[in-house]
Amino acid sequence: MTTPMPPASVLAPLRRGVCIPALPLALNAQRKFDERRERALARYYLAAGSGGLAVAVHSTQFEIRLPQHGLLRPVLSLAIEELKRHEQKSGKTLVKVGGVVGQTKQAVAEAQQLIELGYDVGLLSLGAMAKASDDELIAHCREVSKHVPIVGFYLQPSVGGRILPASFWRRFAEIENVVAIKMAPFNRYQTIDVVRAVAEAGRALALHSKHAGGAGGLKTVESGGVAGGIALYTGNDDNIVCDLVGDWVFDVNGKRITQRIVGGLLGHWACWTKCAVELLEKCHWANTSTAAANAGINGGIPYDMMLLNRQVTDMNAAIFDPAHHFHGCIPGIHEVLRRQGLLEGTWCLNPDEQLSPGQADEITRVCRAYPHLVDDDFIAKHRDEWLR
Image (cartoon, rainbow, N blue to C red):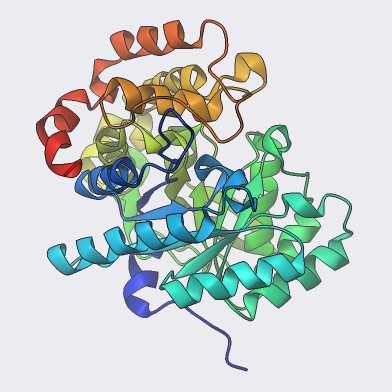
């Protein structure tokens, strides 16, 4: 059996690093699927310059898989139609990511469905296997990888993930068709575990560009990575800019291995997406340009990028609701999109998922505080054409 891999046209942008929003679920007041607004969301993200979409993931609501809703295939099908339509119109290859969850039988079935529909990779969540040993988890991942190329997913325990040690990630990175890992533990220690484990597994992605060096100049990156390495993506909505700017360096058997987190696959980027695309471009610029090196202290990271990190994190706190243990993280995204006229309301399939007390006021506060991170004008200009 041939190990499935994405085409080179998909691997190139994935490894370069792109903005991948996690697609929300559009519902009407009766909590029924609103296809018109779902299409409008996909069109918004692609018009904003996103490099792909992640569908049937946490922000799409895991409940779409429940028999009483039966929305997994309809949502996947609608999204792939919009992705392929945009590819045909723009000539741009997009990274098409579908979520894969559940025990092995369910996960394999979902992986097969993704390939059938035309998705490139499966974002593999391990939340359903909370009691499995590392050996069982690896066996599960290998079985799913026989059917779809894999993007690993370190989901924070607060929203259904589990703690996974560096030893697990080393073994996971050795799976041949693991092409990327999304790190979203919202934890610095656990994020470092993943990046280090990828280096130790010999799967660090080679860096071919030059970047900021000492005395304000540039130096060639001697990364020690491999061309077919694993692309690292941030899902740490509390530290987006900090993840994306600068090198991650580890000593592996006496060899210096340099890596970067190249892109983001984020629920946070499901709103204010035009600004997210611009943010990622700025992070890439900060990593690679002479101007960025000259703007930084001793040829390092520009000061304004660190300030931007704090501003983006403050924005995220409003929509992701850490003050209430992330209870309002999905409705928070919906509230921004509702105010912008893309969604009709903040409804979720689970009626208990609602905005937390004071969350709407927090969203108002951050939008006023950081107007450079809000894309209301862009949406207002194009919203009617997306909603047709």
